[in-house]
Image (cartoon, rainbow, N blue to C red; front, side, top):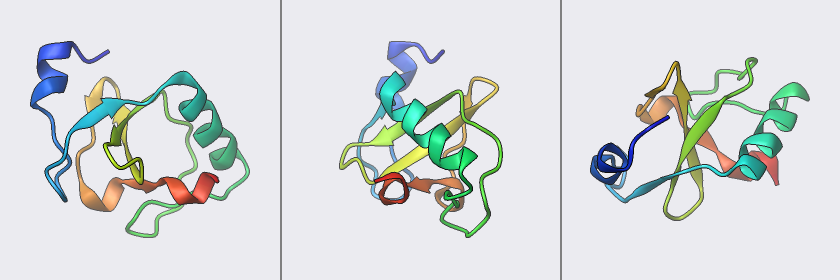
Length: 85
């Protein structure tokens, strides 16, 4: 996936805080909510495809999807984690 040296360089584009790889449990919970049609990006687009991985902001409020091994670090494409609570 993303190697440690690269991960150490990546930050949230909104608050410049550190990011960490989402664990399997979080990805599974997110994908369940996506399957149920409950997930939108911050721009309001419904997320219809499951995510393989993601980067979680340090405060655990947002996840940035990783698509084809490339982190999508766009604020509008972030997914608010309060949608899967």
